[in-house]
Amino acid sequence: MGILKNKIVVAILLITVVTVIAVRCTSRQADAATPAVTMPEPAVSIERGEHLVIGGACHDCHSPKVMTPTGPKVDSTRMLSGHPSDAALPQINVAALKPGYWVQFSPDLTAFIGPWGMSYSANITSDSATGIGAWSEENFVGAIRKGKHMGFDKGRPISPPMPWDNYRNLSDDDLKSIFAYLKTTQPVSNRVHEPFSPAEVETMAKTKK
Image (spheres, helix red, strand yellow):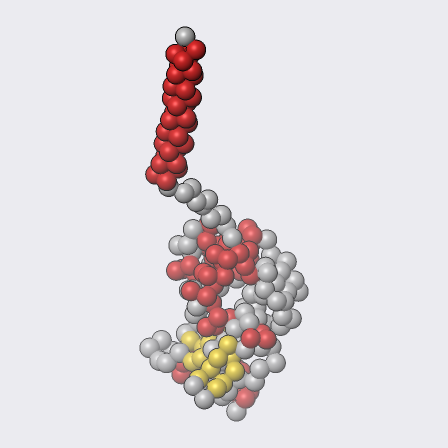
């Protein structure tokens, strides 16, 4: 009787051990078969905005340049600060005001002359007085969507060659990300002049002669 009882106890223990092992193996296999869950990136982020600013070639016009043996390079001390207010411009050729003629660019690619007159790349750093530091997100998104300064319906039109009519097709999250990044940039105090009409450019050209 004692021997039979011992055999029953051993059998129960063996069954228990085998069951535990089987459950653990099944659990591990299930874990291995389940793909890792990755958290989606935030829809609006500073990193995304920086990527869009670089990929969208914003530095090409909005950042002053320094001339090097291989051509103009972005001035890292004045990134995205627009046309330098103290920069001297070369002689103006009023022929550029006529449609079908060459469009003129300043040496650092921040000032432009064409049939629309003369325009300058804006200061889009976080400087509150001369950049967009005091702008709201609504101002920025509205400016790109409408092609109007600060997004106001009665604001002055954003002049060429700013391709706002292309950037307006970006999503709200894209534009908000760009704005979030620009708000983190180094503020640079540089008050960019308002654009000039063709008639004003002609007057300027005559004055410089």
